Image (cartoon, rainbow, N blue to C red; front, side, top):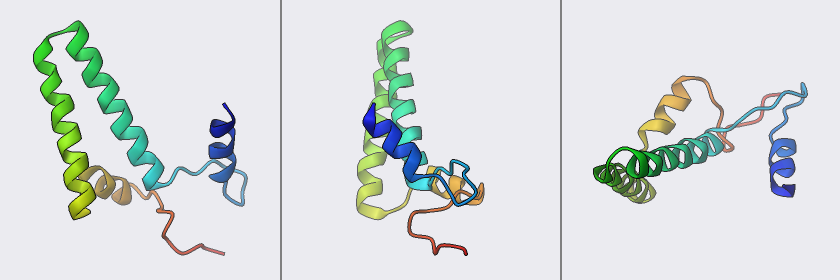
Length: 88
């Protein structure tokens, strides 16, 4: 609970609006995809477990190569990175 409050406070921009970064968006996307794949495995068919394996393999390759399609899409959507310079 306290982590959620800290996370929301730490991502509030100077206008008082919540601003999710690409890094946070990537964690949200990956976590959601893993939960969806587990639900599909449980409720639809056990072969959906391969979707979970695919997600995990992509996370491992992304950690080594830095290439991540969801991050590229988020950048094109205009999401800022924690590493971007601050606009004043």
